[in-house]
Image (tube, rainbow, N blue to C red; front, side, top):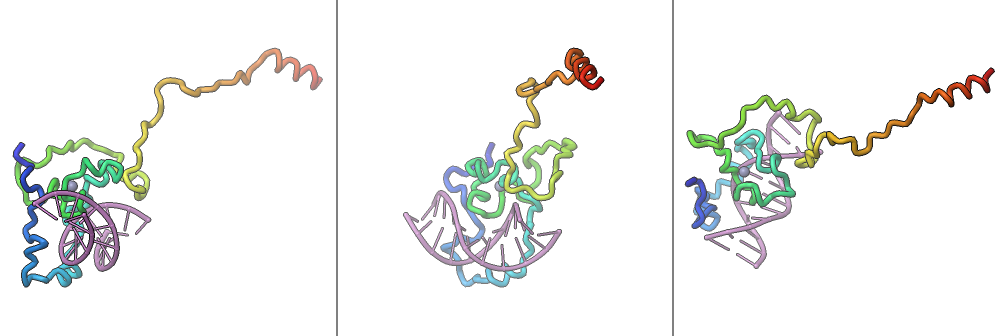
Length: 128
DNA sequence: CCTGCCGGGAT
DNA sequence: ATCCCGGCAGG
Ligand SMILES: [Zn+2]
């Protein structure tokens, strides 16, 4: 609760309009260290297909405020579950569909009768 | 190859 | 004020 600012969700420290003499962007951009929050989630968790679910920042490619560091308590209660999933397969072409592993029901479980006594016998007979 | 962030641009 | 992309850099 209290983590959204309907009035002005976008409140960057430096307003693009207030780009006062700062103008240090270039240097900062070339000097600053990327990966401020090592491995964002909005984009990977939801995916470009669900961009609406990202936080406004991620939506506009800004600094993810959802995982903003420095934060302190009240941070998204992550589930420290041992998700071995991780990057099983090297990189992911954008939020893979994560499809359901497999269907519990035998949707297309074909089991042809490879053991047919009649046929086997016939084959044997023919062979012999 | 991929992601994230900033600035700048568009509405 | 709100929304988005281009481009840069690191792993
Ligand atoms: Zn985010």
